[in-house]
Image (cartoon, rainbow over the protein chains, first blue to last red):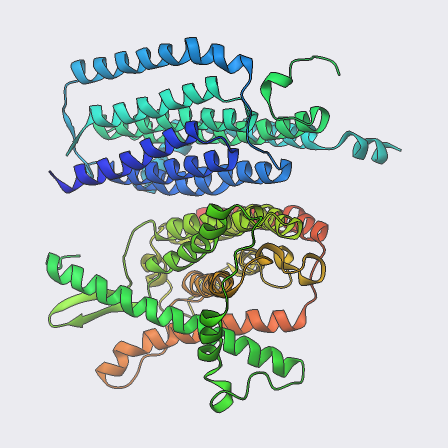
Length: 172
Length: 100
Length: 345
């Protein structure tokens, strides 16, 4: 067993445990913490794949910024344990078996047909300079479009989260 | 050396967990987190494919996914706060009226 | 990098132990320095009873923390209440691992870099680890189940996320100039002089606005006065660590000082030439002087922190937020654009 496989299995086990824990836990803050664990372990997987820049961005943006927002909102709204309702039972009856079948089918197809060619780890260093070249040269238009998207998202978040009374007071 | 299919299986598993969470969870914040989990599963397969085909474009695409995820989290959480302000609940089953 | 595996492991372990020991000692003595300097600023003596000049005070404090009763209030959410100090401490101590303290030294024919590990995305790694550090504070505030703690945790997470953006953008100017994420490369490029005597540090190389943005944002990131809103004792009791006692409280305290030291190290490396300084004397002295210069610069930063603490009042929370978003962030972006234009020119 090579070191890479051991590390892959280690990080993969953390990912799987975190993802399952997200489903099992009833309190949103526990789910958020297990999701953070999944993201940190995924950063480890990216490192194994030689994508160190993506790994760093994953930790900074996903685990360090987006999930902080989630935790912030959970704290702000003082979200409690969730309770069972009728709607969820229908979802369990039909949704879960469907998803499981789909997952098993996909897994079977992937294992069967893609063969098991090994990924040459570290063969693709993905240095930030090359990524920057791609991002600002070949993918310049999508990049600019996403910047507009982010701008719209900022304005939308401000408009949505502002208290209606506050704007009325300002208008007066 | 880890086969590509292992990474794809892991990514697929995370995606499936996200879908299951999206379906069975009733708390609107947890549902949002399930969506993030799905995006993470997709990202893993992107990076694995990038390493497999020696094409950095796969990694670049992960950035776009992250930007979309960030924008979605900002707007989505703002919506959650707005919903909580008017309905005082985070349970999606109780958010079923168009008008209060 | 071409070391044989056993020597590499041995060197790494030795370096880690030394760095951890030095870091913990430095934390203890920056607390001492802070109490001493703030005491002098406020025209009193500061610690003076334990040992000469109160030098053994950190030891006494540590013993006191260890022997105090470790209370866990009954109404807290126990798993997270116990985990939060550990999270804060772990992330605060981990970020030091990619900081280079000096050039390589040669021991027994092997060249060993004075750094626990040299990764070529070192700067991003530090940013990532420090951005995870906010969870310690936020979870401590939430799990304490106390409104003051909750307010402290909320303030901390909002403040740290906001100022992280300005902090990151202020560093991009340096990154554009150096074209590398490796801290070692960035420092190496700052060797030499302008016009014979001005050191070629990034601070003198057009990045002084970047430095000031970094400095202010770093004060907010480490929750120090004038931005210590998460633990504002006048309004929040003690903020996010109101319910903590004994070693759990000490963990938060040490995490704060460890973050201060990391931020000071980063400022030294990125803006003040790292270990560059005049070299003279016999070979052994030439090998140790870079580490000495590095330490001197970091101590200057810690002194600056303490000086500001003794001088400035605390801001209001809305002032903090509008300052961060409406002044610091545009300034950082302007600095970034100006640097980019200057580099392309």
